[in-house]
Image (cartoon, rainbow, N blue to C red):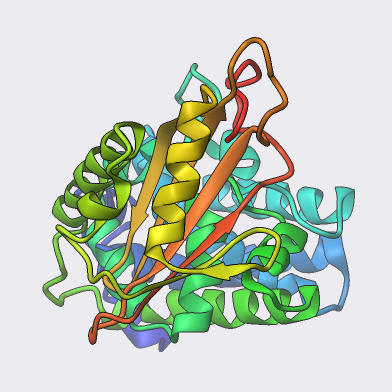
Length: 325
């Protein structure tokens, strides 16, 4: 963006207030205005490496989601540089991946409750419709890794790679491409009309809850066909491929053994919907199932849907007593 455009833009405090009201274009102007100093912080901490650009882009996406936490609009410059510093520290501390919720804990300046629960993110940030419109413009491969990284507990490169069945290097590359595209879209999409992501997420959460309840009654398959096609290919954590009927049978078998699933989070795009659930095993058999499960639904317009199930390696915070099934 040219200096002429930036010099004619409103002052920082006005752009912050507009961004907090949901104007993505104003946030784009803020990021463009402070890009040089953000880049300088990353360069000083990481040296000349590709990680510098990744850190700046990661910080931009965190700012997109956490701009509402900034109480002093005049302090946006120092706040953005602080976000970059904490992203860089996280990269230096652990080269693989640091959960995004941990990074966001560093920038939630006026919150006393600690890092946000990823299940609440879509209900909190004011730019959610813009984010989802931007996500839908990514390719399916880029969209999936981004949804997992930023909106679920499956945040490490290694776990995303396992869930997607791709090498870790491919996950890194796809996330880098996605960050670049999303950061570049901030200004260009700022004035466009976007989908109502809140309504879509609420609808899919209701469907997930109804499907889970039906599953606990032994009616998962019939409930599924009320909102999706019965033509479903299911890939299990072991790599086994089955259909909807077997999914219903397996769920009912676990229920008969005293296992229950508790829905924790729903992330809903137009073509990919992710459910996160705790699996609670019976007290007499506490290790009957792993402690949690992620359902990744690929919704096909022709009705040939795909579902991949995955057991994360770590539990969602606060659910130490819940076991997956």
